[in-house]
Length: 482
Image (cartoon, rainbow, N blue to C red):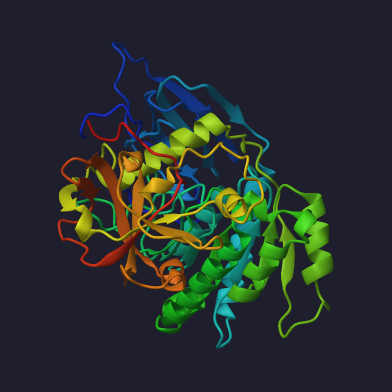
């Protein structure tokens, strides 16, 4: 969404059956381009399946995708996207490809609210006291446009010369990392239309400016699956972000904005996890969207006069009309695409992962146990046979309440990801849980007869004696390599 009065200079694989998020799909025999004229303060909404070619080019005027301005006459490949191209002054687009749904929409009141929010945050930054800029958390149910809001506000802040920090606490989607991770990144360069926040500095030359994210592992599908672990990892992330901002005065003045999963919108738990995030990050602005009940509940709990050393402002913004439901099939494809993009990049910026072959004796692999396994180990739910995990893989006896168990590699790992922790392979369970992530490995092959494992890694260097964490989330991607 282009801001009035602000201009942005133009932004200028290996074969696999796995789709790439935002990458160009193989073109059909014939493509017919069509033109769409959008009036001022309208948007072009589209939903495109993975693997389907779909591209948009700005012919005249100004337009944005989630706060990132489109360069004139440049083709953007948006396969696998659900998004909206917004224009403040009007524009003409050239569209090629087939979408599952596409239409021009004039009900875009949300955009003015989002821009007003950006203006409010800019005022707070200008008036920032010694303790820094606004500390913002965006909350709401799933499919309410939270991530789009975070991306838009971050992009506008960068245009205004700020360096905001963006924090992702949703393990279902990755930010500069695969799913099953929390990420914090200070954004000092403009975002990219196709890749959003860009790519991490992994392998190969790239056009898009790379980011250096801080990553923690949370190898579970939802915060509710392991709430105690969620709290601990959030605390570690908050400490790391706070310390980093103390070392960077520009980032501290710019503040941060946190994207949260819809599972935190849980009145049954009295918003326990949400309250923990507010406390650990010292949040002073809460933005709600998509739920009147959540707004009222948070006002009662955090509104003016509710105690504390600093007032917390609880605000509401309108859910965008283009925010659509993302079903389980789409989310699984998205996770697969994010895993592939981490190792292989996009069609515009392909990356070349490196192959490493190690013996069993060179590895220290720990498996994250699910809540159901811990329950069964204590004698409850012993009849549960849904888990196909083989206890014979375990290389050491595991206490019933342990989070992790050290395992011997097996073919069951094939297609899975392992998080490389900064801590050593013989560290305590707490150290493995609390340690940040150096990077991720993909298990390409396990040869049980030779007792060797072949990995794909972004970097050519070995990772030394580091703990490797394996979880059941995200699910294995068996067709990443052939």
